[in-house]
Structures are given as C-alpha cells and as structure tokens.
Length: 430
Image (tube, rainbow, N blue to C red; front, side):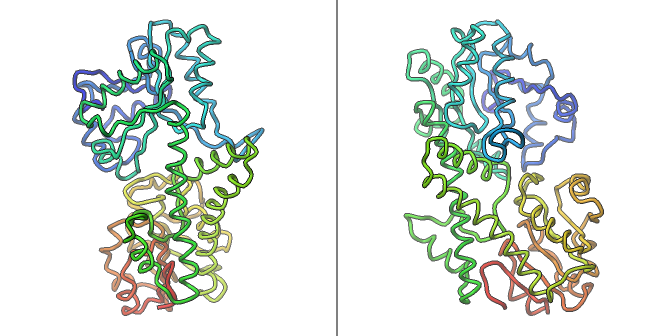
C-alpha cells in the first residue's frame, strides 16, 4: 500500500524490538520473493518501522490490526478455538489512546463476530463513539504475496450497515483505489466478510484433501493422479488450481481456519457441518501418515540407522515458513524410527530445524544432504530441485537408492531410468 500511496505515511509497529530492528536492517525477518527489494525502495520514504505503538496510534487515522490469531494451545477449547488474546490487547491499547476518530481494520484472520467483540471493548472503555471497526481480510498466498497485493482477485471490506460504517468503508476503499479497479473491491457486512475469509481457505484446503484422497485410489489401481487432475481441471466448473496431489497442506492458515470453522459450527450445534469440514483435516493427516508408511514398507520395514535425506522443510516453495509444514510430521515419524536424518532447505533457517529436531544434520546444499543416503524424501516443491544433477546424487547413494517424491513434481521416468527406486504420491510403482 505504501508503494501505491506515496502521499500516505505508513508506520508498522511492534512491541518486539528485535523484530523491528530486523525490519530496519538489510536482513528482513521473513523471506518472500520481491519483498526485500520493495522494502528497500520505500523504507524511510513513507514506510517506517517502530516500537512507538502509542505514538503511531495518535497520529494515525486508519489502524490495521495484523496480530497473530493462532489456535489456542491452553485451557478451554484448546486445539479448536482461536486465541484472540492479542486482538483484545491491541483493542484495549487503541482505546486507551484518546486521539480523535479512528478506523480500526481487522487484517488478521478471525472468527465471525470478532469485530463486534472489538467494538464491545471500545464501548467498555468509553471509546466506541470515536472508533469504527472494519473487516478487511487478506487473501495473500505465501510465495506470491507481492503479486497478490499488486494484482488481487478482489479486495473485501466489511462494515457496519450504518452511515458511519459506510463512511469508514469508503475511506479505506479510497486507499485501495489508488491501484485497484473499483470493480474488484467488494463491500459487505462485517460478519459476511469475516466468514468469507474462513470459507475461502476451507474451500482451498478441501480441494487439496480431495485430490489427495483420489491419489490413494490411484496408488492402488495404477491410475495416475496427475492425469486425473488434468482431466478434472479442464472442467471449467472446477478449474485446475489446487489439484496437485502431495504430502499434505501446511502453513499458518488452512489448519487453523478449518479448526476455527469446525469450532464455530459446533458452537451452533451444527454437528454435521462440523464433521464435514473436520474430515478435510483428517484426510490431510492421513496423507502424511500414508506417505511415511509407504517409505517404511518400501524400505523393508525398517529405517533404523539409515541415512534419510529430506529435501525441503518449508511448507511450500518460495517461503521460509515452516508453520504446520508436512515435513514436521514426516520428520517426527522418521526420527521416531531412529533414522539418521539429513535436511536441506534453501530458505529455512538451520537453527529453526535443529531446535525442533536436535541431532538432525542440516546442510547448505542438496548434494551434501544426499551423500551416502539410503533414501531421499522430497517434501517441498522448490524449483531448484528440478535442476539437480540426479545422476551425481545417485552415484553417491547407498543401494538400492530410494527416492520418494512427496510433491509429485519430479520427472519420475527419468529418475527410474537412472536407477532410483522411485515412488511418487498418486502413482503406482514405476
């Protein structure tokens, strides 16, 4: 937004000094293609990073709430409900700063009625008269976030259906119209906006679980899941996106939002609805467990003491994000079987992997990770893996040399011709 609105000052604030220091340095705290170049271009021009939360609130007209809303890990409804602690803390902080009229915008993914809860906090603090809450969920895909920001499918703004609410919606819409056609800006009521975000992620996760369910049938029948997906995707009612079979979905959103949707349905006694969406989660866990079981069965029932190379630890390509990555579940099972695990990922910090799995060897290149390996497990679809010299890798591996493609994106016939015992999700033995 700062790039397309050069006349508007944007200040990103956080109470974490180390994180703000990173945003003000040459090494940003997260990896996203194109992000570094963009921040370097506009930082200290009209984009600033600071720990002065109160100061930023005072001088702002629009406040975007972009805090973590992970699934609760403690207390009542742990493992199901959203943890809205940070949202309430931010709402109270804003209310305590008496500095005129403010538009408060939910950017975090939140359960339905959260905007109403924020408004109640403002009312309790006698600040509701100068606050208007909007819902403006983001629909960014990690690895494509900059592209999604510049050319979004749509921008969604939910507001209260009051003159003040619609005025706030118009003010926010005006910012987006600096680079986005008005026809792509969708306005609705707040609750519909909040639910639409959950529904969108649920539908995407559902497609992944659906093709992964079909992949299991393919493995039993000799059908090829890539061919099935290609045929299904040509139906214009369905489309081709999110039909690539793999070891399962991950990231910070899909599982959390599905759990939130299931929890919401159960809170309204909609048990059949909750069970429906919960099955998407169960299928995702099944796909990961099935992958590990295939590794075990093909490697003669044991991997104890064997060198297993893991290529890819991030939950998807073009990001260093490991949150809920399928690689974590797979590695937990592999480590439990007492395998010697060697990992390579081009963007995930080595310390992060070692913190999760002490004793794991993390390498700076794929060839080192695969040297003397009994098997390779490809768990992230990084483009660089397509260009590896697999003949060189095969020559340095133990025999038989197993390769398990957990993303179904390598050239399996080529690998088989080299001599690998190749196994891919959604395909029978090659």
